[in-house]
Amino acid sequence: VVDIKDMFIDIGASSKEEALEFGVRPGDQVVPFFEFQTMKNEKLLLAKAWDNRIGCAIAIDVLEQLQNQSHPNIVFGVGTVQE
Image 1 (cartoon, rainbow, N blue to C red):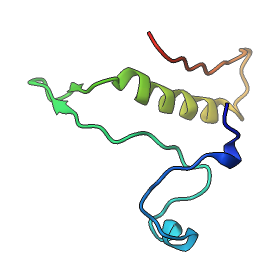
Image 2: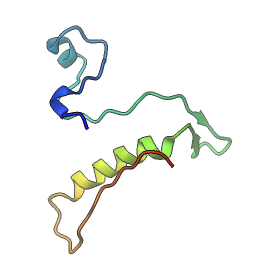
Image 3: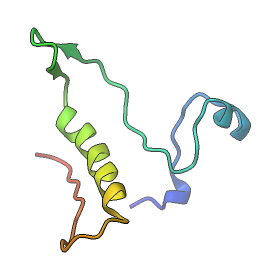
Image 4: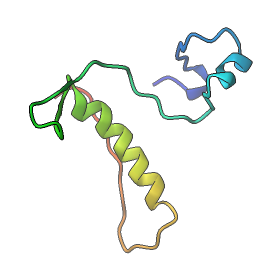
């Protein structure tokens, strides 16, 4: 497992200042860019591995929204690799 301090994501910025100008902030969620298609029913979209990629982002968002809410549940956000 890589320590978060050792992680690197290339966003095309040449400096911290340039990254900030791009609107990128520490702690921002990151998901890979991928092509998708709108289906005949325009409410539906089709993409490779969408469930895995978007699912992780949604889980993080839900956990953040529940963090300061009062509820009787123990909530876990889980991600896995390989199917």
